[in-house]
Each structure stands twice: as structure tokens, then as C-alpha cells.
Image (tube, rainbow, N blue to C red; front, side):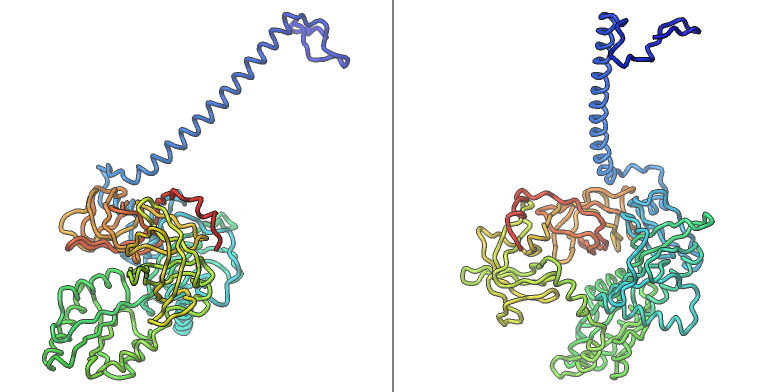
Length: 554
């Protein structure tokens, strides 16, 4: 112990090596222990309060985030502000596109990139990708700035090959070297590259969607960006009678194909029943419809084999619509139609089929039959492989559960077989207890651990509606083989949607839950009301028999 000369107080800064200082009285010792206990209790109480506060705040943030999707109270927002909030900002001038910065890379807000609509920003790109695969539908491009004519033709051919590898879909990584290093591009370079990519897609009748992007800091602090772009291509074929001419349903189908921005091919049937004057009148009406300002398509009447090969081999622009005149009775025009279908790009490559066969099985039920006390389901196997004796999960039921069933016999094209692979249609005989089946159900592998949902969020576009779509509006929703009435529970950032409006909408299935996957395309209709969209978020329900997944093996 020592005496502090300045303060005149005893400092207990040194403790004897042989034990505590005897000068500390029992009264002082008890007071110190009491103080230590009080401080310890205070620390424990503070720590407990912090944990409870964080838990309450987490629950509150989760609920606020969910309820915020349903908040239509933006009273002072202008139409442009609402469109931007719903992710509907599309630059009108593609050549002079201005890029907009996003503060939060995980925001659900959509923006545009090079005049192409960007999807919900639910993830960012990694710092480095694997090396570019030589096969498949993934292509790396560092930049595509003002290519010459010869290079542009090679780029289009390359995109066509990638699309064939990916069943009509291809992934382009812009601003990425072949080794997978993300170098990024400046705003001007990225805009020029997206413009070139858009020109390439237009040559093949494909559409672009920016999936995600990453901001990269350059050596001198320069901000650069890399983007991942989805290129997609599909065909729409409309057939109607030359004898009856164009019906209102035909015009409705053409308008949906135009809204979905897919290539169109038209077949005029029953030419044996119609006079030459009726056939010509039907063709003239069709040409008049396709050349309207809303369509701006160029009809092409296929008259010989060269026309069919040129149209089917993707040598035409996306705005050209092939027209065939055929008769199933006399066979006129069927040869040209078959030639056209023969030269179309394959729907599924062998490599892609092999990939799908490695995934857990997923069978869409489109038809249900009852034959001699047996239950038969017909549909399409989208993933995996199903063999006789396989145990699958059937559902969802009304309580979101899936029940185990066993596959008995398998038929394809009315011929018995032992196995069905991805991409094939088949009829399956299933066995189970108290089966309640309906169209739209699925047979799924136990490894897939399927979940059903009542609520899902979709980015939609209203094609036609007489007034305004608001909360509570009911419409029939089509998602793959799912067809059910759904209720609009909320519209993100808006009180209602009118014709040609876009917005993020929360739907709720009215009767029973369904299996819905992110990225699935949807169509909703009610009377004359029509709309399209894409699922961007699914609110899955936990099944009551979730432990069933752990009780079976594949």
C-alpha cells in the first residue's frame, strides 16, 4: 500500500503476492461483494432485455415487411413514381438509355438495363464465376460494343447454338472474361453491349431479361458493372378454319402472343371446305390484323419448300409471321407444315435432357381416370425418372400435405413400358389409401421435399380491363398445369391497375393450395379482363406431415 501525495487517498493498486491486504476491513469486503453481485445481476438483466428487444424487433420487421407488400397508401405518388416502385420503368429510347443506381441491392424494386426490364433483385452476382463451359446454354462476353457485320453474324449464330442447347433459353454473362473473372464495364460500354445483345436476340425472335448485376470498383475508383441476362425464345401456333374465318377467340390468342412477345405461326385449316374466295378473304383479314399498329408484324404466306425452310431455320426477323394453308382431308399444305416443324430448333438437347433426368422427379397431373377400381393419372414428367414401383408424394391436399403413393403400371402412347424420362408424357397407375385427386396436382420425389402455398407474389401486366383492378379482385390464374381462382390481396405501391399497367401483386388461391415455383409464368383472366406475369416470390406453407419426408428413401 502507498499514499498518493497529490490526492491524499489510499490506493489499492498493489496486491500482495501472499494474499489480500489485511488492511481491508470485513465491512469494506462485504460492501464490495454486494456491489459486485448487483453489477452482475444488472449485466444479466441488461443482456436478457437486449435479447428480448432484438427478438421483438425481428418479429416486428418481418411482419412489417410482409404487410408492407399490401400497403396501398401512397396518396401523393405520381404515375411515374408508382411505375418505378412496381419495377415498370422502361426507357423509351433504347439507344440513349440512362442507367439508374439502386441503393439497396437486395430490394424487390425492378429497374431497367439497356432498355431491358430487370427482374427482382433478390441476389447479387458472386465475385468470380467458373470458367466458361464449352457446352450448354451459358455464354461469357466481356463486351459487345459496335461489332462489325461479320462479327455480328457470328454472334447471332453463337446465340442460336446456345438457345438450342438450353431448350430455347440461354444465359449471357456480360462484363465477364472466359476465365470467369468479373471485370465489369462502364455505363457507356454496358449500354452499348446491351443494345448489341438486344439486336442479336431480335434476329432470332428472342426476348431479354436482366436477372442480376454486380457493381465492381475499378483501380481508380471507377464504378463498373457486370450483368447476367436471360435470353428466351418460344413459338406460338394458332390454327383456325378457312371456312369460318377469323373469330374473336383468334384475335384474343394473337393479342396474348403479342403481349408475351413470342414468334407466331398461323395455320389456316379446312381449305377443302372453303372456296378460293373464302380462303383469300381469310388471308386478307389476317394480314390486316397483323399489320395493325398494335402488332406491326409482316405476314408471309408459305407457298413452297424454300419458304418453309427459311421460316423454320430462324432466318427471318421476329416480326415475320409464317402462314400455312392446309387440309387434313386432301393433305394439301401438310408437307410444307411438316418441313417447317422439322427444321425448327429442338425443344430439348440430349445434354439438357440428361441434366433434367438427374433431378428429383416431378410429374404434372393433367388428367385423372378411374378404370376397374384403379386410379390412372396422365400428364407430363418435367424432371427426373419414374419407374414401376417407385414411391412418390401426391399433393398438395387441402391441408397442404402430400401423401405417399406407389407407381404401378406405366403407359406411353398406349404402349406399356417400365420407365418414363423427363420431357415425356405418360399415364401412370398409382396405388394409395383414400386418394383424392384433381387436375393440377403433382407427383414429386421425396427428395424434392415439396411445399404448397396459398399466397404468392407476381410481377404482372394488365392487357385489358374496363376499370381498375384493386384489392379483392378475383380471376382465374393459370400457372403451368395449375388452374384455380385467386384473389388479389394487395398491389405493391398502388391502389389499382388499369389497362397496360404493370405492378407487383399478391395473389391468394381461393380454394386449395398449389405447388408454385419462382420464375413460373402466369396468365390471369376474368371475362374480358386479361393479364400476364411472372412469379417472383412464394410464401410456402409447412405441411402437417413434414416428418414423412424423413421416413422414406428415394
